[in-house]
Length: 220
Image (tube, rainbow, N blue to C red; front, side, top):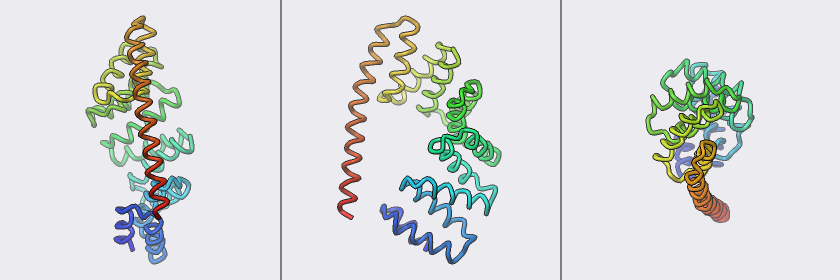
């Protein structure tokens, strides 16, 4: 059941995959691989409540399962808007796997949302030591410095992010705000225009994705 379920996942047949993982769990209530695989499919289907239940079950079966902690933490952060619980799960992930860049990144974002800017700066810097060239980490580091009142470092990190991903409209907007605050109006206007161009492209991409998803649904 597990092997076939994974095969279904590979071809996008998520409902069939869940049925197989359900059968695997029925045969063996301790089958942690079935819970974890099913949780990942629930994430793909945006059924976050069921995904969280399965990640929690994985942790109950193995309290050293770092992948389950980080995934549950992401749900707490992004879906449940519970930064405190998210940070606890990211803390546990890092206790088990101190070199997990994603855990530092998401914990940094949780700290940023909680307005704990010094902690966020520390975590984003750790991410970049582990994963150099991570555009989103530079962008979020720029935000943390911005809200912490350090416009020089904020500008530096927004610029570094845009070197890696020049089509990120949010980073253009944020850098434009910094340029505006330091009196560089021409640069601020240029970033604003670039953000507008990027937004149009991304809206088109999002619309294309929705259309493709609709077509797949109809074909089923």
